Length: 100
Ligand SMILES: [Zn+2]
Figure 1: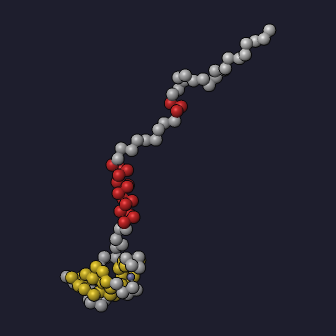
Figure 2: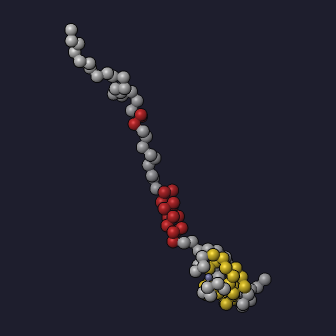
């Protein structure tokens, strides 16, 4: 199923930011090489209907990988770890001297 010039195919348009109808304007080895969005009429390489990763996504992936690779320390344990040592939970303050 070779594409032909003028064929209308779906592709992702970065300007429209969605899949739109495109006309084939250039062929390479029987496949669409360049297409023109029929909504905004911009030409671009045929992307096989794949949306290019946005810069935001790239950044996100970068962060994600950094977290995976990094040796992020686990959240600090709560202070109850110091068990019993110096616990003054039940210690009472010395009362006033009894007044006889
Ligand atoms: Zn478009």
